[in-house]
Length: 332
Image 1 (spheres, rainbow, N blue to C red):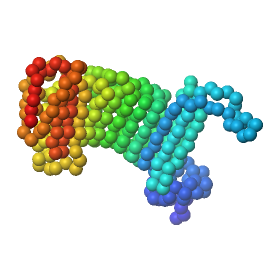
Image 2 (spheres, helix red, strand yellow):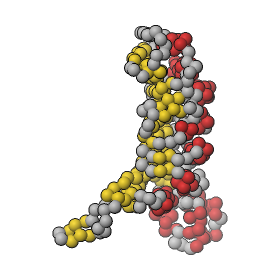
Image 3 (cartoon, rainbow, N blue to C red):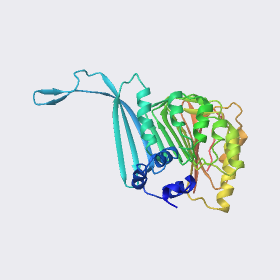
Image 4 (cartoon, helix red, strand yellow):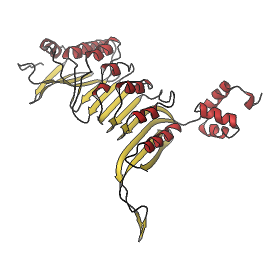
């Protein structure tokens, strides 16, 4: 039997073990091999980090002596930079686009995505993540299944919570970073976070103060019940939610019991931001502050009361609207 006589499943297994160079050469053998490799995305280099940055830049003509090369217009252009990190090095490509046209920018990102296999991290900086961008990312079936870290910085996220949930469900999300982005508060909600069973890091820093109205104790209960509590939770830069002190106490107690039986590999670092649920309990706050073995510190400003608690492998912080409770609290 010759190589050309072998069935497709055998050829796919063989090509999966070959180097990208050998697969590229195999595409030129005949039409069947070319179609097989393109259909099943074989031989593509694996990328540990795929980063897309978008910035508005003024383009100036290049001068060489008295010569002026390039267009004389200095109209601002959108500069798209795609950086792909591999084991053997870093590849970087860039393009200047019209700021008013997002279609060409999406095509440029899509061309680079098609040429590689994503492994670990997907990062977007300064982009508008809308319906067209969502369709571009999800066009390739199982193309995001190996992504464990997604980072969004300075982005305008214009997705519905169902689209955002579907996008995250196509990945194995362990680390989620949303820094200085504009987004609908429903994107950070119980139904979205409870759909991420492998989540270990959650960092939310909104561009403006926001109230995450759909983030409640249900998420904390789900994490504690299923023993998949994230090691890092950071709700910063004015993020407020409907999480209560009672929910934080319950998850803290579960985590302390787990660390007693099995020491954690990394430190637990939680900052729940501002707790705005009206059903806060003074008794729950007192019992949390007086937990044995935990050092507590309470600081006040004109807007809120900051609670900081620490232990050997635990750092917990959250804020309460001032004044709550009315009487000052001190705990060792």
